Image (cartoon, rainbow, N blue to C red; front, top):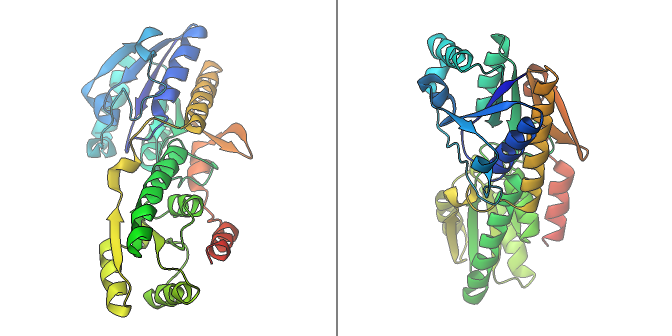
Length: 319
């Protein structure tokens, strides 16, 4: 291939810029021209293409978000929108496309592949909810952001002898809550994958109080409930002083961790290598600490398995 394009779609994730930088520079080293599509699939339809060169990706590896910007695009779900996107790609002489995003973005990449346009997907989402890869871009940085917040919240909870419920992102995946909860020494971790009633939580809180604990942290995945509602229900059932914090979009921002810069770079290079060999319709990931790729249809069909053993370990060490 002589000319490729890159777009970022869906929710932004730290490490996307590292992937863009690596793909551009490796692509140029292979003799390719590289274009960027601004604002995701919306830009594909609206013909928002820009040339990317060595200097246009300088000083971005440390930046959060995405220099190409991103957007949701309902129009791309229509046959007319997809046809327009492919028409614009071909108008610019683009022969292959790299899509950086989560499962929704990958559905768009899958459709492009089925329509005959070579497409490679790079997993960019803080949720870590794609089954085919051990880790997604942005997950590690988001965990560190949550950990920093937990550390600060724990200071004030200890001072006032209170319990804090910290709600984190992740949609229906509990990995952010689990990993950050372990790192933050959370007393209770609540995730969508493990059923836990309010009575179960109350029993655990009473157990902690009986053991001499006067303060604590509950990490709540957004897919398992809402912090404000849980705070009210637990306050009604106990005499504990409970507060809630919803971390929100701070989890998506910030300078990417070394892990996300490393993964972003490796994913970007691997994606370009595939296109350089004339291979499309794949998604890139990491499995058992090795960068690999899998057929996009096969990868999206995989069912995610929650690490129950890790969750049980977290419950034991929280006592």
